[in-house]
Image (cartoon, rainbow, N blue to C red):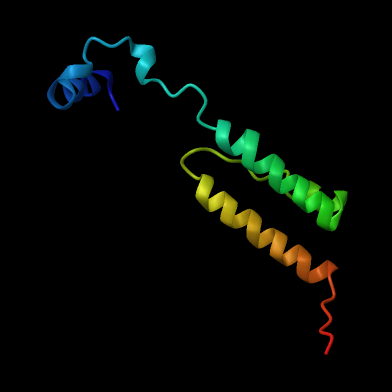
Length: 93
């Protein structure tokens, strides 16, 4: 959005925030949650369950705040596929 439009929006909709420093409104680290918490946990779980080769398949996945949910769903689908190929389920009676 253009700077002038942002300023108009700020003045009209959030007048109480007009005195704030511009750094208050900036997103400092949008990928922090996904990249530093979720992805390492998923990779560790895949490594423990399936092995190092399958962890490498997760490397192309990237996470940002805008698409974190869809990426987590993608990773869970990949893990499910890997489990089907590596695990043989037996039912004991």
